[in-house]
Amino acid sequence: MFDITYLGRRCFRFIKRYPRISTAVSLLAVFCLGIWAGRVIQFSKITDYFRSYTDPEMSDVTKSVMDGITHQQILDNGVLTNILAISPDAADIRPYRALSAGIGTESLVSLARRHNALAAINGGFFEMVGTLRGESVGALKIDGEWVSEPEQGRAVIGFRTVDGKIETYIDRIALRQELVLPSGETLLIDGMNRNRGRNELVIYRPQFHAVTLTTPNGVEVVVRNGKVTSIHDKQGSSGIPADGYILSASGKKQRDLLVGIKQGDAVEIREMVIPERVGDSNLWASFAHIMGGGPLLLRDGVAPSTQAYEREGFDQAFHSFWHPRTAIGKKADGTLLFVTITAAEAGVRRGVMLPRLSELFLEWGATDALNLDGGNSSMLIIRDEIVSVKQKDSTKPESKDRLKLTSRDKPPRAGDRPQRVSRGRPISEKARADRNMKTARGNRRIRPMPQQQGRAIADAILIFSKP
Image 1 (cartoon, rainbow, N blue to C red):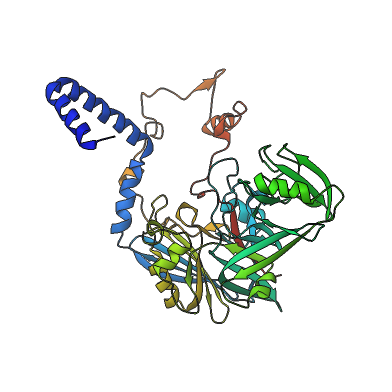
Image 2 (tube, one colour):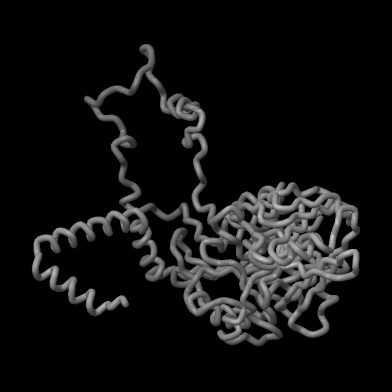
C-alpha cells in the first residue's frame, strides 16, 4: 500500500546522502517549471490585473440608444457594469446559433454583424473542446424548434411576441420527448443534437450538421415527412435529411427500436415541457424562443440560496467567486435588463459573486433574473461597438513607455543608411506595405486579427430595432 510518510523519509535520506545530485535535480526541476510558467502564464497581464484594483476612476453614464432602449455604464474600482434596458415594445429579441449550425463557434462581433443586429449579448453554456465543440449545453429553442434539450433542473428564459410586445418568463424547466411507435408504445428520447451515450435514443435534426457524427455501434433510422425511409444498423454518421430527422439508438434502445419499427412505418414525436411552477406547461409550449442558462438569480423578487445554485449543478467555485458575469433580468412592467459585469481592462478577469448579482438586480428593480454563460464569454455589443470593456480615451496622453520609439520608428539622422532601393529606385513606406500584403498564399500577415474579439461562443441573444 502506498505510504506517503515512508516516501517522504526515503526522499529526505536521499537528499542527505547525495546533496549534489539532489541540488542538480532541484535546479533542473525549477528550470523546467520556469519554462512552463513562462509559456503558460501571461506575465504581461499581471500589471493590468493589479491596476484594475487600484484604478481610482469612477463613472456612471446613461445614454439613449433609441426610443425605449437605454444603456447605462458604471465604472467602479476597475469593474465595468453594463446595463442595457429594453422596453417590451421597443425591439425584437431572439436567439441565434453560431454559424447557423448545431455545432461550431463564432465571435459575438461576427454574429451580430452577420445578422445586422442593433445589440447582442452572449448566450448559454456550450462544449468547448472535442468534435462537438460549440454544442449548446442546456435548453435552446429557436423559431419553435428545439436545438438542444434543457439540462434537467436548470433555469431558462423564454421569449414570445404578443400584440407587438416581447413577453418573457424565467423558470426552471425539464423537457420530456417520446417516440410514438406504430404499435402505440412509446420510447423515451434521451436527447437531441448531441453525442449519443450508452443505451440512449438521440434525435438529430438538420440544423445539427450534415451527418450525425456517431460511432457505428448503434442503429440509425431516417425519418422524412413522418415516415421511416431507411434503417442503418451498425453504420454510424448517417446523413441528416433536410426534410426530416434521424433517430439514433444504442444498447437496449437499439434493440427496442429495431423490434418496434420498420421501413415505411409512420412515427410521431410527442413532447411536453415540465416547468417548476405548476400549471405553466402550456405557457412554455407557446414560446417560440427559449435560451438556457443558470442558475436562477431571482424569482418574484426573492433570491434563491446557494444550495439552490448547487442543485442546478453549480458548485461553490462558480457561484462564490468574482467571475465575469452575463445575466438577464425582468422588471414588473416587462422591461428587460441585459447585464454584463467584467473587468474594465481587456484580458483581466474580474467580476462579481452570484449572491451579490442577485442583490444588484433587486436594486435595479428586477423581479426575475437568470445567469448566463460568463467568464471570457461575457460580452455586450451595441451598434458594432464592444461596450463590455473600457474604451480608451484618445484625449488622454499616452504613457511614456508607449511613446518611446523603436529603432524602426525613429526618424532618420544624418549619417544613417539610406532607405532600401529596388533597381535604383527608393521604395516608399506605402509601397513596402502594399508589397507585404501580397505575400505568399497562407501568410497570416494578410489576415490580422482585430483586438478584443472575446472568446468564440455558440449562441447569443440578438436585439433588433423595429421597422
